[in-house]
Image (tube, rainbow, N blue to C red; front, side, top):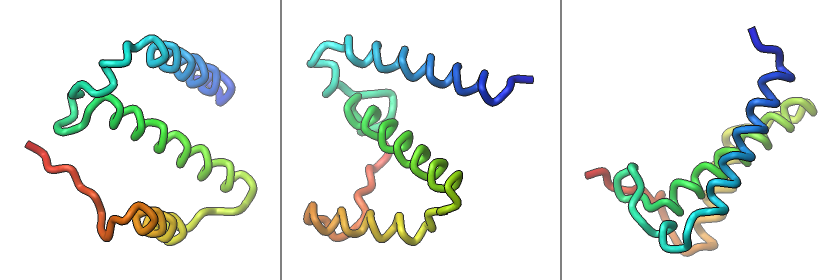
Length: 95
């Protein structure tokens, strides 16, 4: 069984590999379709970054004893949508 430190090292190594891979992508690839219906490569990478930042924040806050209620996250998302001029959730239609 892996220790927590070993898991962190694997995660750091894989993050670095992904970062190097993405840095080497030609500019035109970012707007090409991905394997996810109606998402281009840029959308998928943005999703990965958002998720990584969100989980990092949740874990950090939890370790500090400051859990982040789901309602706060929803409120922040609604505020962001208002600033961008969107009144509802933006959903991508699957084909």
